[in-house]
Structure formats: structure tokens, C-alpha cells
Length: 276
Picture 1 (cartoon, helix red, strand yellow):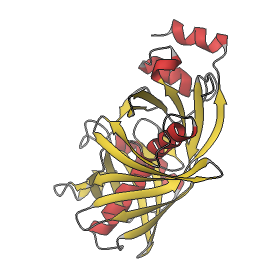
Picture 2 (cartoon, rainbow, N blue to C red):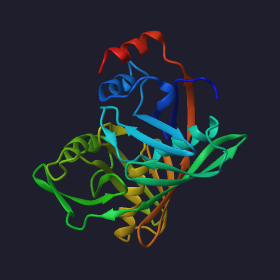
Picture 3 (tube, rainbow, N blue to C red):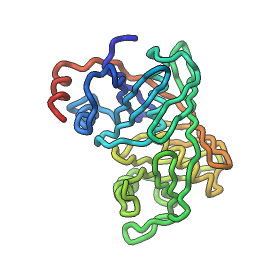
């Protein structure tokens, strides 16, 4: 393995910095994560993926750019799977990643010796049947609230525009109904096999794509009888293929790409150690 401090990768434009916790040498804290994610002062990313590798066990901590921790990230986990495969941590085509909400089984697909796509078994989605509408701006939004390891509020029937996303995203994310905050999507069904989604992520804001958001949208649409079991979810950054079983078990497959490998400069390393 090359002696690196970090790798930066993206899944459909949703970009993350990956660090090996043992080799990075600086304990991550919310303040340090905010600095690393800063687009002007740090490395710039939608989050940090902190990997601890030991005896073929791979533990992943997912940091949002605001310094909070996320339970799960579909794009992030695909990025971690590629990182582990491409940088010599495992030569297996299938292996598990451990998250705070349980293990995720992965399978990597290689081309010319590099991982180009990853399949994730995301577990079962859970629909909150108690919440079908949400008061906002003096009216009620048509929503499906669903967990795919992390919480999502899928909104139907609204204009599918960035303007509407930027209006409703922060409002719903911080709604009194969701004291721990929530991820938000605007969904638009095009056919039984194709859905469009705009994404507002908890702790990150607007993102070009989100793996768990794609899973949540597919599960919500399937639960409403709007789509079949095989769904292409199209987001601004690209599309993911999602399989939804009758029990709402979900499998997601999508591309992943490394942007660059790097070593922290002495200046940034010093600034990181100066903040707590």
C-alpha cells in the first residue's frame, strides 16, 4: 500500500474523503471534520469516511460535513468498498462493512484491476405508518417517512425543482416532527421502472446524489404501488439501480470513482492539531 493520508472519491458527485483511522495519526473530532470538509480551508467534501481495519473486519464511521455522525451512507459505503479493494486491504470480491446500525454486505465489480461499481445489501426499509402528511408553510405535504438505517422523508406531489428543494429541504430536515433531523427528497415518478429524486441531506444540505436517499425513494414508491421491484433512481449526479423485495429488503448497485490520493501538508496537519 502507498503511504497515504487520505483518498478522495465520489459516487455520482457525492464526494467523500476516506482515511484509515490507524494511519491518519490525528483523532477525528467534529471541529476537525468541519475543517477537513471545508471547500476553501480544507480538502473539501460532503463528509469523511473513517475506516478501521483489523483482521479482515472493516468498521466505518461516517462523518457529515457539519461534524455530526451519520448512521449510513450508500454512496459512502460504495466508496469505502472501492478504497479497501483498490488499496490492498482485501482481495475478496464480497465482504462486509460494519456500521453503527449493523453490517452491510458488499460485492465489488472490477474493470482493468480497479473497482468501478459496487453492490450493497442495504437491509429492510421500515415505513413509519403514523406519518403520511407533514404541516409546512400553512399546508400539508404528502410524505412517506422511511428508515433505511438512517431516516428519510420522501415528499410527493411538489414541483421537482431545486428552488422547491432549497425551500422545503431545510424546513423538513429541522421539522419539530423529527427531533434528530432527517434526510429529505423530492420524488417524481416517471414510469414503473424510473423515478427522479432531488436530495437534501441531513447535516450536509443539497447534494448531487445519495445512495440511502435513492433506496428510501425506491422503497417509498414501491410501498405506494407506483413502481415495480426494479427501479432506476435518477438524481442530479447520475443514477442508481435499486431492487426492492416484497418485505422491503433493498439491494443497491452503482458506480464509484476515485478522484485523487493525497498527503496532508504540514500546514493543514498543524491546523488540524490546533483545533479540538
